[in-house]
Length: 223
Image (cartoon, rainbow, N blue to C red; front, top):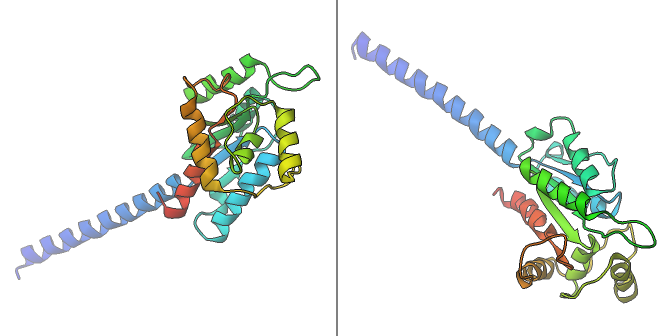
C-alpha cells in the first residue's frame, strides 16, 4: 500500500470513528429526551398517589431513570393554577412530555369547584404551549369508576365519590387499585366517542387520563 493510500485509509477510519461517536451521542440524547415526562396535578394526594405508583414501577423495572419522571410542586388547586405550577418548574421545557392533570369540577352551591372560564383558559393556554391535558369531568375519580363499570350518564363529584365508597370501598386520598386498567382505557375511549362533540367542559362524564397512562406505558417498551 502506498503512503498516499495509507493516509487516505487512516483519514477515512478517523472520520468513521468520529461519526460513530456523534451518532452514539445523538442516540443517547434522543433516548433521554424521549423518556422524560413532567406532570402537574390538581389534587394534592389522589392523582399523585396514582401516578407515583406508575413511576415507581417504571423505576423499579429499570425502564426509566427517576430524574426523568417529575411531578411539579403543588401550589394550586384550580386548572389555571395547575398549569402555572408546571410552567414555574425549572427547565420544564427540557422534558419531552409535558402534562397537566385537571378536573372540570363545576362550582357547587355548597362551595368548591372551578369556573368555566378557569377550566377553558387552562385548556387553551396549555395547547398554545404544547402541554397536553389529562382532564376529568367531573373529577379524577371517574377514571377509577371506569375500571369497574361503564357509565355515560352525568354525575357530580359528591355522587361519584359516594358511589365509589359505598359500592367499591374507595377511600379518599388512598391508592385505589381495583378493577381492570384495560377496561378503564376502553371505557374512557368509548365515553369520548359517545359524546356528539369533543367539549371537555360539558361532556360529563368523560376523561382523557387514559391518554397519559398510555404514554407512560410506552416507556415500558421504549416507544
